[in-house]
Length: 163
Image (tube, rainbow, N blue to C red; front, side, top):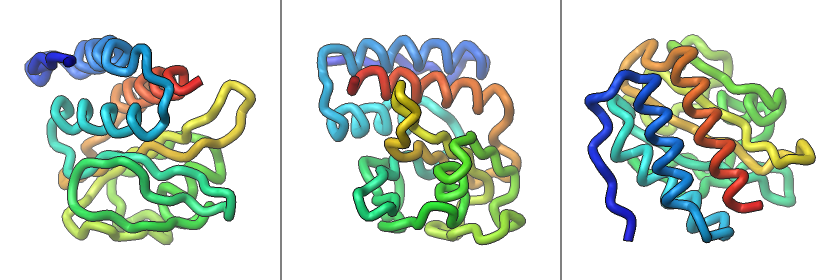
């Protein structure tokens, strides 16, 4: 069993560094994508303040992103590549930090309470797209460059854990 400490008192940079260490320990020894995705979503949900949803959309053989393990309200099930923030991150293979989701062209409103979003593409070592990691907040402008760097680091830990 993995015991989690409360890390929310740390600065943002220190929080993400501690979360990366926690994620490495939590995911160590397990290679299953679903198990590790579920545990990473739970870890982030417990430790990152001011979020209302976090989870995975995984690339399926038909080319769509399908909702995977997450924490928060029920989510949109399928997202086409190129559609919404998740689909755009998948298509461009670049992290998207959106301060105001209502200003993002084609935003998909799965939860009307979400006001800002960060989406990190999950890329295997060979560059193949695995899916995306998506985090929403009810706070406008919640995510910044420190969140981008921290979330990208967590996604590298996750992708490495599943081989």
